[in-house]
Each structure stands twice: as C-alpha cells, then as structure tokens.
Image (cartoon, rainbow, N blue to C red; front, top):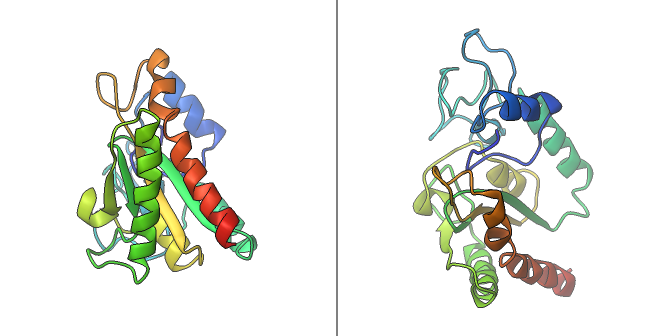
Length: 210
C-alpha cells in the first residue's frame, strides 16, 4: 500500500506500521488470505466496478490480488461509504499515486473512452499546462488503460461509474530515487510543489461550474 501506483489514499495503522518496520514498498493491505504467507489485497483492484475483469489476479500471492470479493477490505469499504454518503456534495475525485508523471482518467477496465472524455481531457490539459508553467515536467494524459495499463476494480473507475462523480482522475506523480517510488526526502517538495498549480486549476473549475 505504501508505493503502489494505483492505490487509494486510505490507510490503516497496521499498513503504515508494516511499511515503516518491514517493507518500505509494500503495496497491499495486511488482511489475512487463504495463503498464510501471502497476506493482503491490492485495494485498487478491490472496488466493485468491473471487479477482477482485467489487470488483476485471483491468486492471493499476486501483487494485484483483487481480493476474495469486491469491497472485501475495510479501506475500500470506508472510501465507498464516504463517497456514497456525500454523493450530492462531491464534484471532483483526485487520487494521488506514484510514479509516472501521468494524469489518468477512467476507464481502467477497457480501452473505450467515457462519454465525457473531452471534458476530462481538456481539464487535464489545462491542469498540466499550469504545473509545467510552475516548473514541473509535462505529464502524459489519457485514460488509464491506454496510457498506463488495464486495471479493473480501481477507485477512480468506481467513483465515476458507480459513485456518480463525473470528474474522477488518478494523478501519477513523478518518480525519483533508486526505484522511482522512494525519492530522497529533500526532493519531495520539488516533485509535488509544481503540481499544486494543477490542483488549483481543478479547484477553480469546480468553483466556476458548480
């Protein structure tokens, strides 16, 4: 869960403790599975929208294990419940991951574009231009399947397809360090600060249109 490029930003104390004490780049939850030596589910394959169709696995030892069923994990349940409870208020969903310097919008389960892809793409282009002007690298833009890889059961797909939040995007921040996922502490600000201007673009769009 610490480093997966496609993981929701919902963590338990157990997950965080394990990352710090055992495996810095652990990407799954810490729930018990049918294989005692292979705990955990990839949270971002666990959402109930085209769950486990593509880019996911049924084998618990896989890094992209989708779980025994959709929403098997308390982390995904918590995010689901929050979004559904606030469906009338949430207008934008941004989930931040690393690494890759991409702005991705649904879908992750198919290469077909959503009906409103032009809106999503135009907004992503504006956001990218703003962060480039602030000193960031140019991000690749497009649907998750075509730009990164196919991955069904992600939080961004579910939030748009079921949660009803039309503007749903995954942000892959730039990588650095020996494996891309673990930039030196001194480099973190230079990686994230320019992108705040992109977030500002999204915020201003919501303020004007809603």
